[in-house]
Image 1 (spheres, rainbow, N blue to C red):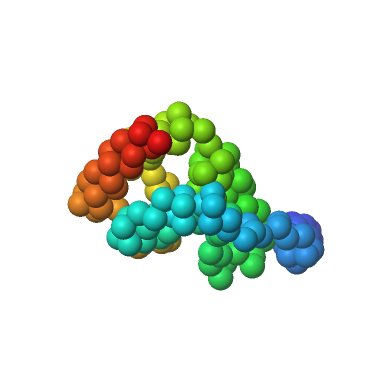
Image 2: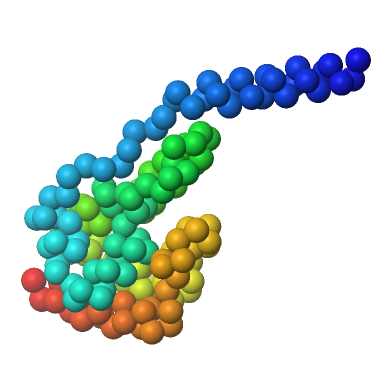
Length: 155
């Protein structure tokens, strides 16, 4: 009798997993406007731009690169949620739409977050090994941010 209950529960779970595969979140891939995208607008050195693209842009821009497991539910919903939340805090694709004070605040916050090891998220670094920032990369980002902040102040 107990075995039958486990079978029914197992088949029900499989059925739910199959059905949810048909409900996919919208992809985060809208065209980048070079007038407001941070990398296109500010044109940081290639090394800095590459770090941002590899470690930040998937969750903090309009141009996410999706891994193969994005095709499996409920993982895609979790990724979509992370991206939405990341863009609420910072969207590099809208950097140029911010006023001077917000751009400075965001730049300073980026340096703080990478220095403290809060960004990229640990869960992201587990899967994206190239997103793991070395101390040299963190120092490079913060040095560039110091220089860029001065430029923004002089605008």
